[in-house]
Image (cartoon, one colour):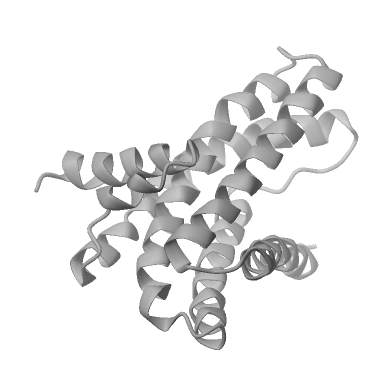
Amino acid sequence: MTLMQAVLSPMAGVARLSLFDRTGLNRFDATPHGFWQSWAALPFAAGPYLVGVQGLGRLAAAAGQKPLDLPTTLAIFITAWLTYAVLFIGLAGLLHRQRSALPTLMVLNWFSLFQLLLAMPLLLLGGYGVLGESLFSLLYWGLICYLFSVKLYVLRVALGATFVQALGLVVVDILVDILVRMAFIRLMY
């Protein structure tokens, strides 16, 4: 399998899942090798994340806030991603979903790349003033709601979680992002 196939197949699976089509799960290599390959999504996602953060930084600067520097932002991104992965495995065990935890984490790794690729153009257009503030806010919140619902769907079909369990796992992901960001800000400033 080439590198291109190793990336395109799971991304095609995520694209199907983003249309609420559970057949997207068939595009993932649910083997230990496929699980370790899914961590390739992290370095692939770093670029779109940093580009999107640049757009957010411009918005923050326009609002009179000091944006974080790129190394700190990258450290927050990696720390939050890895922290959630560890918490997810532990929480899946508490939910008695150990058998599907690693395959689901594999899907979530690729989904993280997918959502960053979707958000990046919007963040750049908003950050560089191409979109008006109200249009940007409307599109951004619409995208967040859509990605939230897709993540709930992914957790329900891949992990076999109930709606409440999937909602809890998504909330934990959001809280991890917030807490990691706050911890880095306190350490750095």
